[in-house]
Image (cartoon, rainbow, N blue to C red):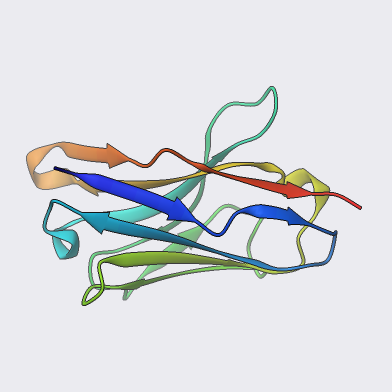
Length: 118
């Protein structure tokens, strides 16, 4: 049974930090490109950060560059998103996604709420 379970969301003040984690099971994690997406109130879901299978390359949305860091641990089947200097506009539900392009397979987590407010 494939599972992606996000954790670490919550309420934080502007300028604060949160660390999101996504625990994967039921598939060969190291074959999958991992990414974080988010969907804010009234907005479309957008890509936040992506990391390749080995972790040697990452990409970020312009809005989070320099503030967010994506990382993965293939031994623990986890992907993390360290979020610093949070802003109210970072408020969203954050989703973990796994993609195996060669076989056209993808999985989504259920999401975790991040609220940045004073």
